[in-house]
Length: 446
Image (tube, rainbow, N blue to C red; front, side):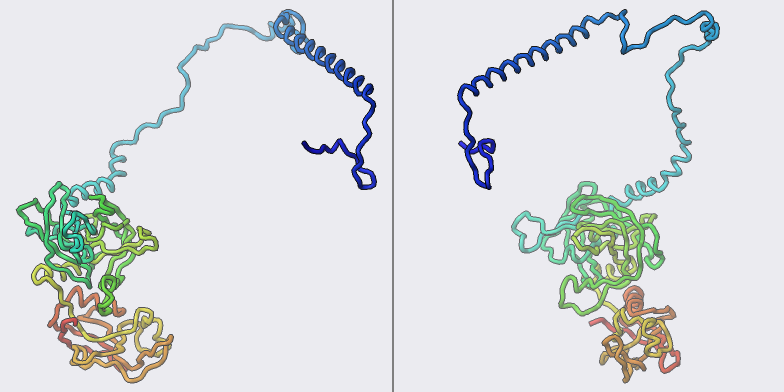
């Protein structure tokens, strides 16, 4: 039970109960209300039945204020209308015109790019393999620790892949597009280039080696194709362009922080989609030739974000034969250090009044190194530039064997791709305003 507002009135701010009328007055009011309600219901019912009857039995011939009154036209009206036989004939329903198909020559021309890619895939895919490894941690189980890609290097059963794919492998299983699944052994690997070689028995499976092109002939904007096994999806092809050349990657340090700071030079940057599982697969030109080995991506979420990297084929051709022959790779060594790329000579030449705007400024010559034996100088005076002491009277290497070097990355790239330990190279240096040539016998990188 609750209080209703109608039960109260406000008097001086206080609730006062209203006096009830006599019982006789209440009964009379009830009877009057009932009569009024009954009359109202009768009127409503009469109106409803009347409207229904009019709708059901309306006389079509009767005049209605809601329809126009029909009248017969006069003879003069009919003459003016000039009724006469018509020549119109019912025809086929009108439709929008259908475009004519383009000539097959135009269609074929438009599809040439896709024809090229399809043909390339059919030729190359049989040479691309899926690599699965089991580490010593899971050697007694069937658990696959990781997987990647690779490609047939020659007819002797050697397959190229990334070092990080097989680095900790205790067992290696290779799957070909033909369905052949064969075991493989790790022949050798090199962390600095992130390249490795594994071997299968050539008697177990038909082998189709891929041709290798000269990566020094690549240009930014050139089309490239990646084939591999992203996320285990075998035989996946993606396309893109070369976004940049001459990048460097700390490949070895990414695998083991104990490595010294030697970068992997001449790296190819591409925008073709590369994801986990593509590692070790070939990067190809439009002729189906290997121009690189897909190795890494730049990402903030673990997936592809438009930036991928490949080891150039010229590095491959210097390192892989060594891995096949000895199981390891040796690098040429000069024995100098230089400021990082943030101290490009073009940026600091004016501040230090340097005679050239490109080259390798020597900041240190290591003891008993090829550079020390050749008499290269790191200078004995320096200035503070951007918080770092930079020598102002040191030798500047501007060329090696006649090839211009813009920075330390160019120099390292040339040494990796074109030289071997004990080779003699000619360095062109700038010293105290003079340009000099000198011969240096390269050593082995420690």
